[in-house]
Image (cartoon, rainbow, N blue to C red; front, side):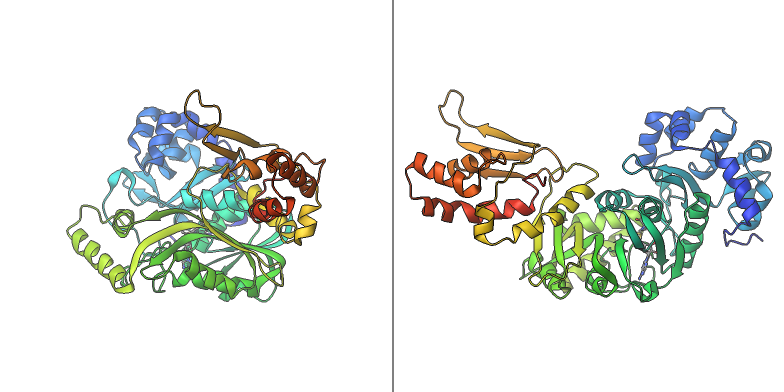
Length: 495
Ligand SMILES: C[S@@+](CC[C@H](N)C(=O)[O-])C[C@H]1O[C@@H](n2cnc3c(N)ncnc32)[C@H](O)[C@@H]1O
C-alpha cells in the first residue's frame, strides 16, 4: 500500500527535482500549445491531449501524468521519474501495467514578482466535466482567486509572513520573494502534506502548522497575513468541502479572519483577505463590513469587485462541487436558497479586504464598489493608497498650502455633442493602479489641471476664483471637500 503521506526523503526529493528540471511553464505551454493551455483553463484536457499527439518524451509524460490525469506506460514513465520512490510516497499508483499520478504536480511561474517552482495539489475534480464530488479534504490547485490574492498583496520587504489556509502553498511561493520567514497554516492535514512537497521541491522554506484560523499562528506578530479562506456561504451539511466552506454561518468565517487579525499583526502589519460577504436585507453591505473593521482599529480599504444574486452564486458552487447534472442537484439548489432566505441574504459580494495596523487615533476606513478593470498586479496601487493616508488626514490649511502635483498617469476625457463648444462631461481617469475615474466640474477640473507642483492649492483656487468671479472662500469651501479624498486615492505624485 502506498504511504499516502507524500513525504520523500531528501535524496528522493533531489532525484524528483532533477527529473522535473525541464518541466517548466514554458515547456508545458510549448508542448500543449496556447489553445491546449486555454482549454485547460476552462477545465478541458482534450485540446492538450491532441497537441501532445504521440509524443513520449519526459515533458509529455509528466504533462500527461500530472496535469491531464492520463495513464502513462511503464517504459515512458520510467524515463521521466523515480517511480518506486513516488509509489512509496503515494504520489503515483499502478494502473495495470501503466502508471497514474494520484496528485497534480505542475510548474508555476509568475511574471508579476518572479515567484516560481512546482506546486502539488489534488487533481482538478471536474476535468472534462467528470462527474462526482471531490473528496472532502480535496486540496485545490492554483485558482483565479489564488492569482488575484497574489496580485493584490503589497510586496514590501518584510520579516514575518503568515499564509493562512495555505492549500497547495501558492501564496508561500510568492511570500518567499520578500519575506524573511513564512508560517503556512491549514486546517486540512492533506493540504499541509502537499504544500510541504511543493515548497520543498521549489526550495522554499516555510514552517507548516496545522490548525484553524489564527489558532496555530502563535504569539509572535506578523508583518503580513495573506488569506484566501474557505469563504463559500453554504447551508450546514455533512458533505462540506474543506477548501471552500467552513462551519460558520453565512460570512462568519470572513468576519473571524478580519476581526482576529489585529491580535497577530505587528505595528504597520498588513492583512489581505480575498472572499465573499453577505448582502443582508434591511442593511447596507458596507455598514456590516464597517462594523467588523471598526472593532479592529485598523486602517482599511475594502473593494467590492462583484455582486452575485443568490441564484448565480448557488449555480457556480453546485457546479464546483461536481453536482451539476446529478439527481440531487435540484434539491441541493432549493436547500441552499432556503438557507439564504432564512438568513435574509439577498446578494453576495466578492472582493478584497486590506487592513493596516497603523494604530491611528482615528482609523482611515474606505469601503467601496469598484467593479471595473484594474492594472494588475494591483498591490502597488494598494500600497500607494495606504502611503497617501497621512497627507489625506492633514488639516485643511496644510492641504491648502501644499503644492500638489497630479500623477503622471492621469488623463482627461471629455464628452459632449459633436460640434458643441463646451463638453457636457469632463472625466479624469487614472491609467494605472485601480484606474479610478472622477467626473469634475470647472472648479475642481481647473484646480486639478493646475496641480503641477509649483503653486499651492490655495494659490490655484485664488486664481480660479478670480477667473470665475466668485469669492475665494466660497470656492475653497466647494472644492476642498472633493479634493481631499483624491489624496488617498493616489491622484497625486508622492515625490
Ligand atoms: C480556497 S483555499 C485557498 C488556498 C490557497 N491559499 C490559495 O490561495 O489558493 C482555502 C484553504 O483554507 C483551508 N482552510 C479551511 N478551513 C480553514 C480554517 N478554519 N483554518 C485554516 N485554513 C482553513 C482549506 O483547507 C484550503 O486549503
